[in-house]
Image (cartoon, rainbow, N blue to C red; front, side):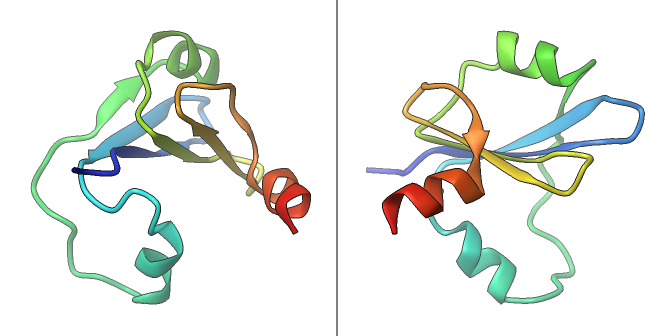
Length: 93
């Protein structure tokens, strides 16, 4: 069974692009720890006109990660609401 996730970026023009990951969505840190990659695959990103549009129309997966344009990571788990990842990590410490 997969741990479905999306990984999204919010750009300076306020648009958001997101990709879907079917397996190992909880392993974002593992992906980052690998360092620079030539590519992750050939799938196309989904585009949203804004953060609000992304939140309102994206169905969501078990884990949804988004790097906001201010440099903060946000996460939504199990179709809940997006929260700053730092707040979630602090609460679970």
